[in-house]
Image (cartoon, rainbow, N blue to C red; front, side, top):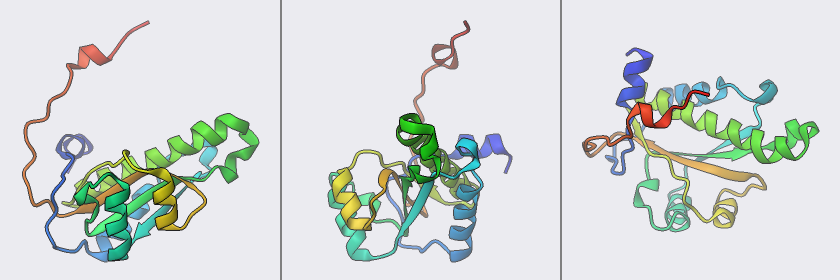
Length: 167
């Protein structure tokens, strides 16, 4: 699949089948996230893989009952500002968060390329997620990944001219 076809095909899926994501595909997704660009190449993020069914159930509660968080593969992307602390507040509060979100985006595109589906979860109780995944880092995105058990509807987007401005 070409890059642009992958981007066009990627859609948020909120219903996954019970089919497990193969370890080889999970490793490719993680490798794509690992290869994502980051501020000064410091990879200011960590990826937490949630395997435990109980932790996934707790994540559903922490995400305001978004049931699809209980997918075959659940990745929590956290900002890890330690490696860029020399950049001060901007490094901690912006660059590390950006790095985690870029890695999450690469993971979603890799999943699509591999015939899998995903959804970006940003609406969650941060403190609850921290407790569930047992980290001191800041979670910024939860990405459930699996085999789709639904067909997405028509994508509604703004016109490209409405989101671009020349100055």
